[in-house]
Image 1 (cartoon, rainbow, N blue to C red):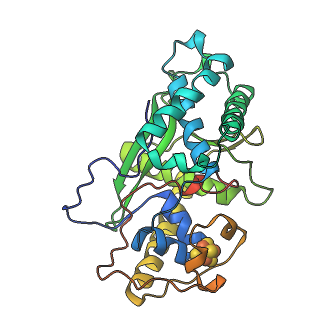
Image 2 (image 1 turned 45 degrees about the vertical axis):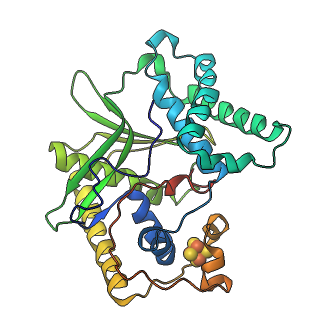
Length: 300
Ligand code: SF4
């Protein structure tokens, strides 16, 4: 089983740092440039969140589910994985114990584990894992665009049709599907992955599929080359904006309802705070795949 860590394969602190972007950090900048700064430039620590940690556990359970023989991929076997996955996460990242520091009788942990099991059970209403053999799970992908910008991230699951070789990119969300009109924003992350896979393999994935366990819904999209070229242009524009902010030091706060889940309100001018001085060495280099999409109940 993989408990996804924050550092991408091949990262070497002494190596030359090249411009790079993951969907999580791109989403941060689009949500709030100051949030991007806090996470990517200042690298401020964040306390574990209940929703993000549950997202990590559920993702790991769904990844591990496919280690079982097809016939054993049942709701019962899947929910049995929740507790051991939590124990492994606790061993790998002891800081998550903070979530239950005041839980003297263990009831909060029991309820939280039950909520994770519930999400895992909902998965079975959306797909039949006995009929699927993923080509890849928790796949690290990376490519460098002609502009020199490196794109990278983790794909939850990649399916390849045996007959045609068509690719389906699948991502699990433990939150609810977006409201009507907000689907395209949710699909941005998937187009990002599709662009990377297209550049890597020369083939546009046939289908992008988001699985929302919170509301028991699927969101699907069939991308084409024009879509992915548009995504590349959008990422280039986004990176140019990040570079401008890096040079000027002007990282604007952009308050929204997502502020409710921001760990840095106390340092945010929108809430009366003062950001710390910028570090002397400022690189807008996204060195990790910190779990931004799972930091709020909206996107977890
Ligand atoms: S509190 Fe809101 S505006 Fe301030 S940094 Fe966080 S997300 Fe941005």
